[in-house]
Image (cartoon, rainbow, N blue to C red; front, top):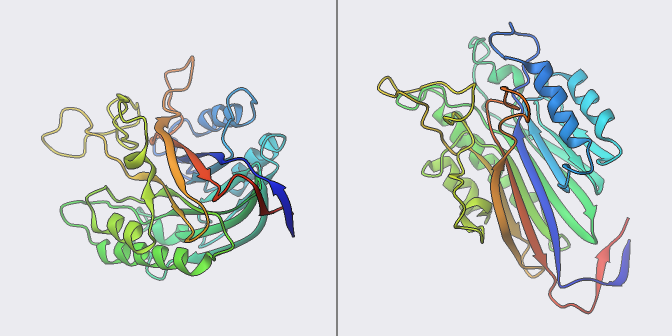
Length: 309
């Protein structure tokens, strides 16, 4: 229902995205140290000292048991969560929220790999875009979570038509599921596109979104923003035959956009997080996490109608 209250001039929203790399039904040398990494992630998300994000989006939580274990462990801090079931083994995409999830919706991408490409596995995972409509801090938040088909060979990408199709469907899903009664759109996930790729441009431009990393105010940070295959991650590998060390690439994103006529949104800071597990040689994943602090401005700082469940 609508309730008349006085809202602050700006509302801070903190968002975390992490591709967890949680393949459970494969040999341990394929997905290394999964249980230890899962325990370390749960420790972070269940601690009031470290879990300062309003929303957490995870990809590659392929096991329903792992999702339930995380949800049960973090419920005191993140009482609301949702897993987007899809495909044969699940989409791997899930959301944890401090604000109440009012409704959910998902769309399974029309083109999503090939069933006979068993070692690639994207077809079995059922890649999706999921939407959680959330009431939090007096705002109506559209939180979109996605994982787009992987790029296995950059020189000869046999899945490029599938990946471009998914980028377009993602952009249209975002456009068709928000309204002028919402306050902010937030999109988080592993896009498997680098910033110069066509798929990245399609999502940003067609859905009218800004990249938190590119628009952050703390531009002087030494952080390079790369989230995958970075030299300081123990699970990284050299992809090019002439590479001596992994080069790193930015394929995990937090994008945001304001709903027309509602509020202004800016990104105060954006950085990579959750790489090396404290006191351990292990990393949380083969990806780094990325966090963004968004400032959602109010049209005026006086009395406004805000959503309150």
